[in-house]
Image (cartoon, rainbow, N blue to C red; front, side):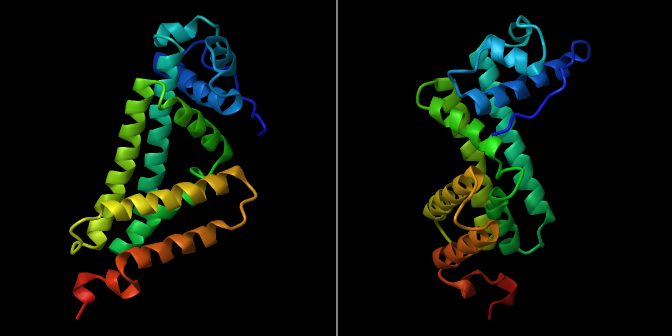
Length: 213
């Protein structure tokens, strides 16, 4: 991964901007150096600020990492919302847009993947990160479940459909974000649509209710 250059962050300016610069620098450090290489010194060096500034805004590195995870989750959620908003009005199109948004930037991104893997590694070890993980994935699954129910209001239980789709999306996203995947984003989208047909019981099963005989 090639490290991008970053301008020195906000030696003078709005405190919220300085705090945000440290959050983003924490995410970059996790992507570049992993958990073991993410420290007060490395975060502040990445942000271009003095080493004491991090503790002015956060209780320590663990707090900064938690805020970076929350910020990263918000970035992904915003990208998903924008994909759905840009889709056709049909429930099926909205659901597919939500599902396949992970296969293109800004979600399918090597740096985002590297940051996300660092968060995943911390999830079983750090209770605060574990709770954040549950919240972020719960929000993702909740958004997907609402769109599934909008598409198929006749289905009494959509839980396992959501589990299956999440597993498929995570695997395809991982391969695409690593680079040199043996398939294209378009082929990944086709796989999701095929799975959706199978899970819904075939293409005819997800026609609009007002179009059914």
